[in-house]
Image 1 (tube, rainbow, N blue to C red):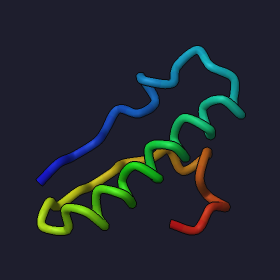
Image 2: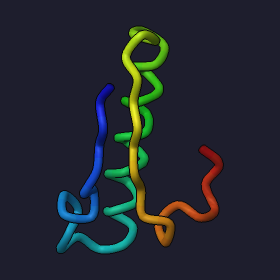
Image 3: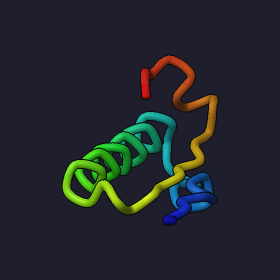
Length: 56
């Protein structure tokens, strides 16, 4: 199991749009990992204020 947390620390200091771009990229990588390595469990904890309108 891979747990990705503390994303807010990773993007701290960036403007809102840049934070969203970084985290959207992370989600794309997560999708790629799921497609290639479905046996690896993953949990990604995201800030609700950045992704309340994006379907996951």
